[in-house]
Image (cartoon, rainbow over the protein chains, first blue to last red):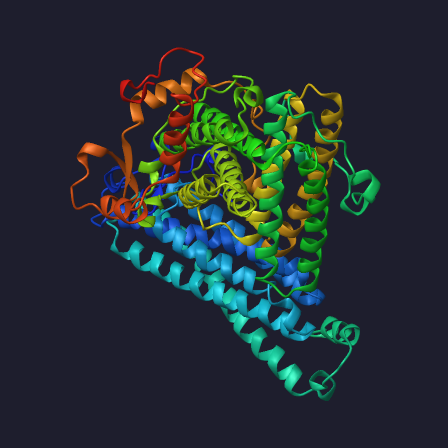
Length: 231
Length: 401
């Protein structure tokens, strides 16, 4: 089962930093990280940190999709968010397997991963905490924008994973990376393109509709209107 | 037996409001079980933290549903707090309550340290333990000085009263109160509960002392409260800096509620007074209901299942108020000369002469120090200071009577 939040119980490890203390049994060092991974002619401690960040982003993406799927008023978006969420969880699983298959720990949370998680946490919070000052249609747009932003970084991560794979020496490790990129890459292209296109459609729908732009439209009417989008 | 609050129904929040008559509780006997008083003091502080956190959270959102959920939970917390705090008897003076606060500080901190799995967090607890232990001694001397009473009547000698790390040397530059935080992913669930609990307890103590200092008449008492309230501020800074800021608002809310569940469950396990037991049990059921609300918010707005961030069950051992005399003595013997240095600690004789600690000491202690004055005064009056050394002479030769 995919781990969406590494904890001590799942075997989480981390590096200490100036202001981050880690219990000794859960601590890991760059040397240990590098030693756990095969020598691929790269700074493998850095690679471990990067993969942890990419995996964390997939995990946070799964949380984002769950949240927006639960809150959207549009059945088409809801269905799509659920589908993309499941695919995102699958991507997290692939990354976990990739890391574990190299001898790494999928529950290692790197400093880079903390940075990504911090941004992702605020991203998903941005879709709800200011909800009171947004109308129903704007809330839908904010949720979709969050998806677009998340997918943008996700896409960039997998492009980078593909580039790293090119640098690996021929062999089993390179093949595993190539298979992962081959499976996930096209889906990431699709996710990002869908989010970009749907944002455009949503803008055009509202821009072209007098009813949508009407100041003072009742919330119930807006919900009904949102429900009918894309149908 | 394993207890997973997520598997319990609790009382739904809509059914938790009580009438004024239900909130009107009969106070405790001030000379009753000291650890019942400790439980009351602790849980009051826990409810205060819960309320203050929910206020802070509410200020970070304008979402109507989230604000309403927070408002509902806060009002219920306020009712719970009213019941708990009003268990304190009216014939218990602020100074007597203060001695209760310090007994909490000593026996809570010592118990947490004894049960803390993470050595760095244990060190943080041990460090501040010796400071709170000294506060108990200073207030006990004040109690004898202005009321002519024996503080051991309140503590029942369950907690020794003697000098700790002397309060006069506890004042340090604020930079030296800030510690590294645990990592939210690797932290032991028990450690998280320990830190949240001690932050709430110290915060309540800090506020209590400065709120009540102005009600006292004797200058030495007013000044002592002011001085020690500043150490409590240091302790709040010290402990709150241990918390990982990575957690989202919704995760923090769930952790607050989970801690409250753990603590009411703990209080229930050890309470002997049947009337109090019923209160702890009721509040446990209420907190489980509130935890479910927090978990629903976490699911809806963060997309996180509570089981992903919470342990499968409460810790096996309830947080327990019990005597810690031997432990406190051992920490005293080993660490009385420890000082904070940056984000860590160092023995006093290893601090360089130009360390900011000495400059800060010079500023605040210039013109005398209330915590020394109170002991000096009682020595003049009685020819000795007040102590309740049950287990023999002080473990530190330089601090013996």
